[in-house]
Amino acid sequence: MHRRDFIKLAGLGGVVFASGLGVKVLGSGGPSNRARSLDDFYFVQLSDTHWGFDGPSVNPDSQGTLKKAVAAVNSLEEQPDFVVFTGDLTHITEDKNARRERMSQFRDIAGGLKAKTIHFMPGEHDASLDRGDSYQEFFGKLNYSFDHKGVHFVALDNVSDPSAIVGEAQLKWLQSDLGRLKNDAPIVVLTHRPLFDLYPQWDWATRDGAAVVNALLPYKNVTVFYGHIHQEHHFMTGHIPHHAAKSLMFPLPAPGSVPKRAPVPWNPATPYKGLGFRDVEADARQAQYKIEEVPVLKV
Image (tube, rainbow, N blue to C red; front, side, top):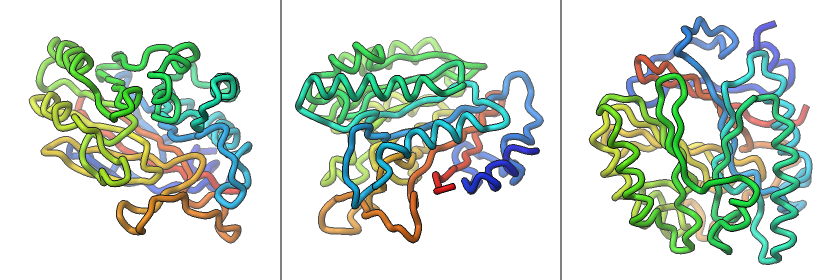
């Protein structure tokens, strides 16, 4: 059974589209039909799980959606090379003990993934109240980089500073990290908030994001994956595509579409609508990516 056939039987669906860096449509057969070289790979992006959130009118399955997503990823015929969570792992709380308990519970649930490698990143719900101290105790560094099969990945922290900045020290680190790469190296940037001014009125921006983008522009093959806005969104800054991921707890309205930002209420007629995770297939040699959005639906 092909992976895409399994997804259909499991009621998870999925829409394939091409985006960024001159990506070609690779067909609708899904990642299970990959004729991949040793340099090709794929990873799964999950975001905004908000473990600890409690709001029956928004998500009556708040204790189950993340677990369903973990089960769905584990059921993939071909396991991803790694899984990355792009922030807001837990829902914000000023109670320090509750914050640590939520992080411990989230770590245990995420630890059930079959993928050998899991990369974590903070969101403002995880890190803004204590500058990331609790987060680092459970998940490690706030920003870091790694290489995988010819692609350089950079995880940026634009959440631990409550003023929503990357900051001068991290910007210098980024410039130093990129400085060892050729200008045509394939680079993937992972972050929580958007690096451009999507809708600053709703905190959908990074105050010094333009400085980060300027540091990335000299490189020909850069793609940014982020979270925070709880919906699929695609944007270009010059030649750099930015792709937002859906949430696994509740969707948010399109930027500026309503007077006040608030979670979209749960609709029993279409449960789990707007919730999902993302599969990214990478061809490192051609700096191409194919993205498949996989919604989480009631099975």
